[in-house]
Length: 171
Image (cartoon, rainbow, N blue to C red; front, side):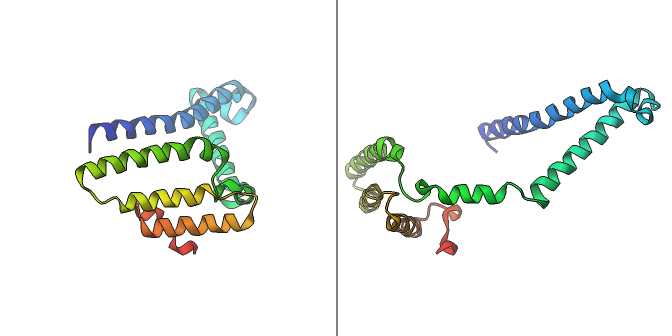
């Protein structure tokens, strides 16, 4: 494994564990403060706060698991929010102002370089055509949303970047 990838993975692991350690230490501090009020844990001596903290942490994790996996209280509202977002399927104003000019510049430079080395530029032209069609779509028109979905599926089918983008099951 390359060193940079390994370092990035270690950084990600450290960032993920910080939240868990924060919860653990917070629970441990609360347990240390309140252990004297719970006779069962107070009678355990110095290990009492750690056992009390473990019980609180397990209860906290079980409640989180039930909330997240069993009751799934967050999923329906997120799906509705996502489906109501018209810019999920058509370009947003930010896309028109920032991203499309950037893509256009990148495609122009790539085309110039491809022509200098004598490479085929058909894929660049098809990509430019795809972005031109996308730029004409507006969220106010429902048929444009359907057209945006169709254009995206067609483009991904013709230019599969990886299996991650294979959404042929959505059609």
